[in-house]
Length: 147
Image (tube, rainbow, N blue to C red):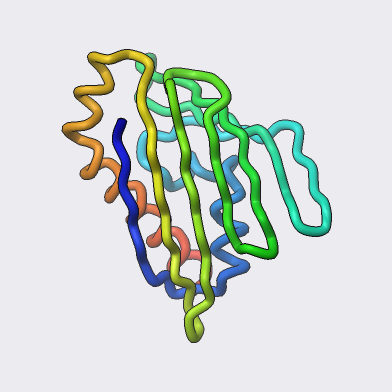
């Protein structure tokens, strides 16, 4: 398995950043290697938003679709993503948001494993580089939209 945690201060309001992260249909506009983002079965209650999300990632004909269950806990300002289907054997991904002055502290944790052992070993070697590139894309998007 590959896992990592990234902690960043993003210069925007917490609510804005949460809305941006939950809007996976817009990911193809700014997330590297993301071709398509779709949301299904969205439900909302006083403290919880849940939905199924599909992300198609890759390039051209070399792509895979990841299906995940997304839960946003409003009181805790936390998003938890778990794997439903696709090339992942395991996925746990957490986003925690804290307002700090006029910005947001974002803590992002990911732990995953691909079903294919060969691809999994290749992915481990480039995992940190890819993760940093994706984290930077979220930061740049937030600055573009909200600063």
